[in-house]
Amino acid sequence: MAFIGLISDTHGLLRPEALAALKGADLILHAGDIGDPGILEALGGIAPVTAVRGNCDVGAWTEKLRDTEVTEFEGVTLYILHDLSALDLSPGTSGFRVVVSGHTHKHAVEERAGVLYVNPGSAGPRRFSLPVSIAHLQLKDGTPRCEIVELKI
Image 1 (cartoon, rainbow, N blue to C red):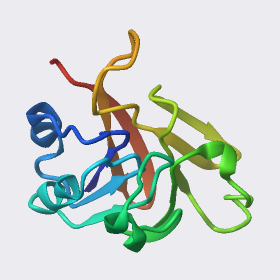
Image 2: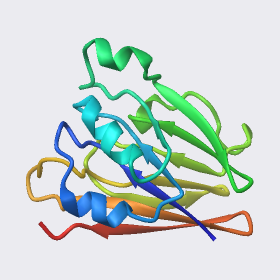
Image 3: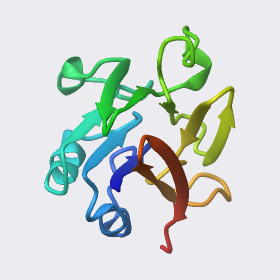
Image 4: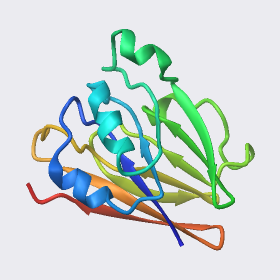
């Protein structure tokens, strides 16, 4: 079984609790609003990282980041973007089994028309009364399952 760590909206703050919760991941996907290139370096010390640019990611270091990414792992094709409202394709007909997004700071896992939509929530500074969270995506025999992990901070 493969384990993909999902994180978003760090906004320059990578908590030790988030690093601990991602330990053992085979791959990490960051769905934008990274805030500091050092965050991608630190995550890269755990596993390979695929990241997209969020609306708050500005500066020269963000020029190498794209607005969307596609990755395939263990036979499952994943689409990553920051803001789900910017999705301009039909994931199911485009061959995607999982769509990962961020932006809202609210974690969510929902399956629609055979596509798993995951927002891991915000792992950075707490916003309002929302929990600080990441997500664990497991892939087994081509089937994705996702669990939200609320970080105790």
